[in-house]
Length: 302
Image (cartoon, rainbow, N blue to C red; front, side):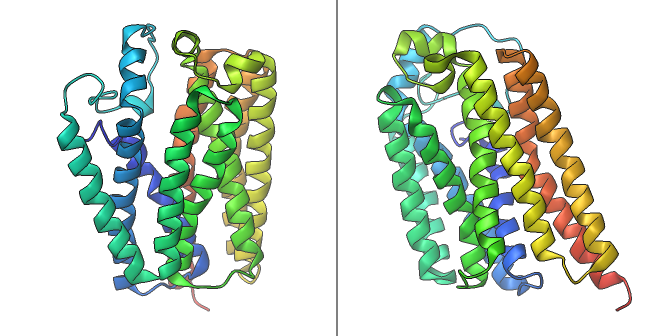
């Protein structure tokens, strides 16, 4: 079940709505934040599993022409596509997705009706993305919107406000990170399989140079939007806010820009997966910076 839900990636993804919650309300009610955390875990485990459930037939074909890859892929931790490999029954997979999805939907509805709507929209976008696998490579744009919707779950669990620039920078930050840090580079590692399957992806259709340029451009947007987001959150906190923004920029340099430059200079699957693995840790690390900053703000004298 852990592999079916891509548990490592799903757990790291929980950081996105939690970050949205803390950006919306730096002092959230503990009970509300705990409810948000449970809803996040159930929702992300359900959504990642639903992806494999919808793609089960395609993944079975994928295993028939699986390429050998010696590097580490954080997405495959816990076992890759157990449903397609016959290690999990279809009935068990459907039950797992339905149970976790229902729990998540109920909890988000209790937090705010907008959250329930966003969860349904995210699930529909996930299904549409899977349907478009052999139709168009531009489906990667859907993943940016999908991930931004997921992050906004945490925001709207804390506040209904939509007129704050931080919210829109947060959405751009998440969408650009997903496109440049996860989607395109993850497809890069599957090019040899996708050729046989007829799956349309940016690396397959437009080649390594265009893919690397599009990836790096998205990473730059991510870094800039992230810095703007932090500047919007910490303007009144002087040295503490400046330190948080500097930490954010340094993290972006390590997790995004440095591996992105290596990919730009030498486009290839190894550098793409190295970027993917680092970028997957990025939102969780940013959440760590936010939590540390909030704790320091409370610990320091006013």
